[in-house]
Image (cartoon, rainbow, N blue to C red):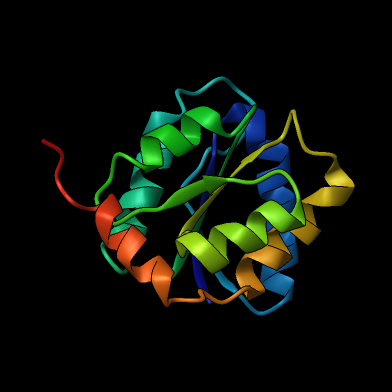
Length: 145
């Protein structure tokens, strides 16, 4: 799977681990930054990841930060992106199954390192159910009043 990945300084360590682990599993990753734990403004890293996924250049995207909340907010501003903050494998499965989440947001400060790969694996391997959820996803993209 082609995956875009990016993190700010607060998610850098987990991003580097995911890059290694997912590449070893045969995924093709493109790293949108950052390259160190030096402070960086997360929108500068997250927005390009989200745009790349929305533009169809990547099947999925993963963004990381301290909590994952700000990263999800930025990603979800891009039309066509459905970014979910996940904190355990079940939240990741539901984000895929019910919401067809194409971007995953993770908080390095809130997720134990031994939980990282099980969350990402669940998100990558869970298919979208479709059905009644298709209508709800269409509603997400409808313009507001």
